[in-house]
Length: 79
Image (cartoon, rainbow, N blue to C red):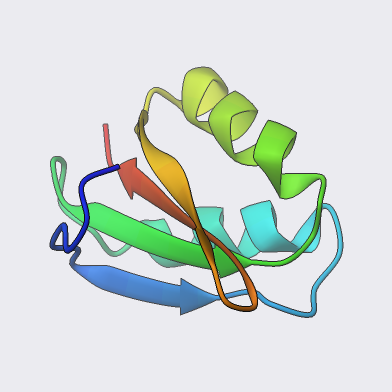
């Protein structure tokens, strides 16, 4: 993931446990145009597996993840 990469939508799912971070990501990405990028903030350890799997299943691009102070930031490009 490129430091300082731009994103179009910021979704804070910290404090939520599986499957809620991915469900919130799916719901909020509905308003994005194809090619736009969402950043998901999550602290659920399962998100490391769930987010890339969600992207593969739904045809979105998983752009990577980056550890942040209180969780992980995931970048997803809408397919």
